[in-house]
Amino acid sequence: MTDFGIVGDATEWQQDFERRLRASYTAAGLGAAAADRMLDDVRAGIGDWTVAEITDAGTRVGHVAVVVSDDNGAPAGRIGDLRVDASHAGRGHERAARDWAEEWCVQRGARRLDIRLTEPAGELFADYGVRGQLRARRVTSPPEPLDGFTARPMTQAEYSEWAAAEKSAYVGDIVRAGAMGREEAVRKADRDFANLLPEGLATPDSSLLVFEAEGERIGTGWLKHGYLPGVTYGYSLHIEERYRGRGHGRAAMTAGEQATLAAGDSTLMFTVWGGNEVAMNLYTSTGFRVVEESRSLSLPRRAA
Picture 1 (cartoon, rainbow, N blue to C red):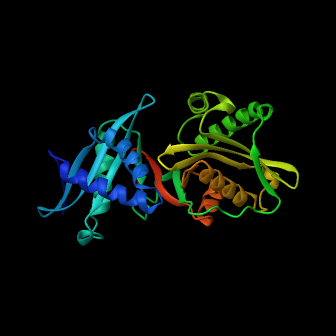
Picture 2 (cartoon, helix red, strand yellow):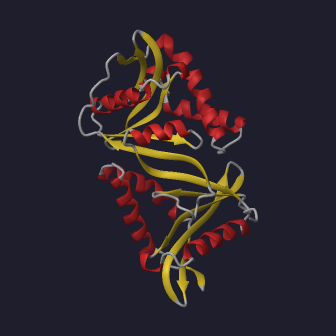
């Protein structure tokens, strides 16, 4: 029988949790300094987590960590960790721990439960909807440019039109992923763009690009260099719909890698929102590994 007991001193669990996270980050292509920076962000919230020991007939078999916090005025739960030791895996402890975490969060008023995974969800979280993925690829050598495709700096005249279109696309991604309603997503987009591009086109450490093929403008790109140590973050690489299906998306990724190396970084990172299967497939085919995947479930769980 699987039982759960709240841990008073979570030091041992936290050390193991951080070790596993660091290993997954570096395996996905992040350098040591970038992995440590991501761990710092996780550590900032760990103090609020409730950690429970998973036991079977008095023997500890793993841990589960949960928290309920305010998310734009509504309580939302999160499974911070769910780990069953390999020697006890496959005996139903994982599902029992998931169910315990869901009920724990429901009892505290949560109407949504989130989880951030660093490995495939498998059957355990298959019915949790994908909200987004963080993807990364280490760039070891300058990629070969593709014939007929160029990437040039955006002009000031092009910037205003691009910013309006980019905000609209960002709002659409958030809403499609189920993360927020439209009005809330619009407010988030306004805040994020003001923070990320405070000087517009002249914002330091930012590359705003226009993609062209055979003399025609076909898309745009937005990159932030030094987002993490040695990491360039791609806020967007967009190919206009009528030019898709011709290999231009792959060419845009190549341009992003070239800009990454030119800025002195060695890893390119992107977020792709849930529901954008085209982008996920592109990133997979171009060697971008999943660093983290965010999933969520509405609570209480509906009876099967």
